[in-house]
Image (tube, rainbow, N blue to C red; front, side, top):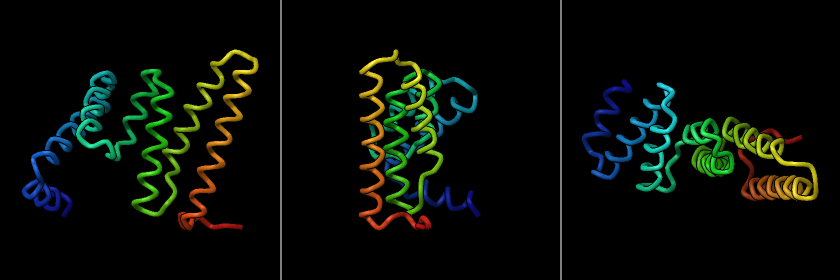
Length: 143
């Protein structure tokens, strides 16, 4: 029974954990009601209390607030947290991270800066993939 499990957790949670849960729930409610600024404020409070929190929805809020670099970072960090905790690929988080990158890239003017940005982004992705493989992968089928 999920409700009983939640009640059991709430009864033994520390005051810090209760604050984090409250701000997370508050952020999710704002998010569901399309109140992005308020959701962003709540999610920032979560990260102030627990910088390693897994709240990938904060990235969606940042995306829609046009905070693309921050959203890209949020999705990348949450993907790493998910993968290290569950040992499975964080597909949605990585798709959103790449969507942020595409928005950033497509908004840049042509030229050397745009070319350099793309090369740097590709380099980071390759490094990330190598690191995951060195850590034993994530249960992803390899050819």
